[in-house]
Image (cartoon, rainbow, N blue to C red; front, side, top):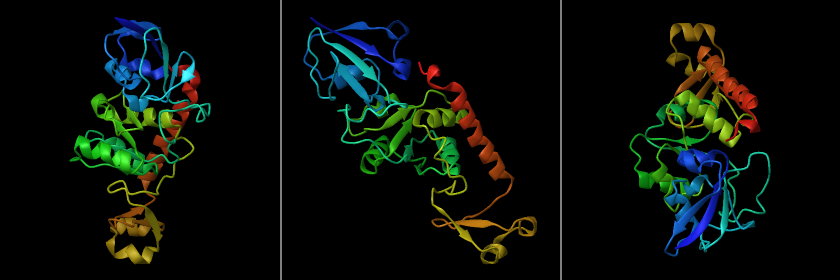
Length: 256
């Protein structure tokens, strides 16, 4: 039986049993297999892997593992540009666009309120989610590891928490979104973009107190919902500022 030695880094350890975390360990195998198949057999979704080094050399997912090889597996590097060394994907994503599984409706709302393009429906099938991620070059957010193992998914993240606020902090920190927010720019309901509109154009749709106390309005270009800078905008900004503060407090040292 052949043996390869694996070492997983940082948050990829979250997917491993305790005895295999943060250490090199032996993995025995008796049949020909790609490094992608072995990584996922060990429990780590390939969509969360950014770099694989085999005996110090960067390889792609199709590399066939051989007896005696030492394999180091890394997640996304946030502080360094390693694009010239990565051989796992045709190219990195340049825009932070997302598609979320059916259990993440609250997170989708939060991300939209922060200005991020998020596809979400509570009736998407796993196949539809994977296809949208691949066809529209979107990061797939889910708590289902098996969904991220679909071959066509190249960019994804498995959320560790089941609490929406903690999930938002995870996504902000994982993808370094703190300086990319554009509050009050997307519709929380349908993901459409918001556009400025004169008060006179929507005044007949407003409740008396809203009509009296607010002057600045935006309308969703997709569903025509009216937005104004009420107290909810301050709560949204506090939410975003909280994520920014938590990310700064955590820093690189918090990575596992």
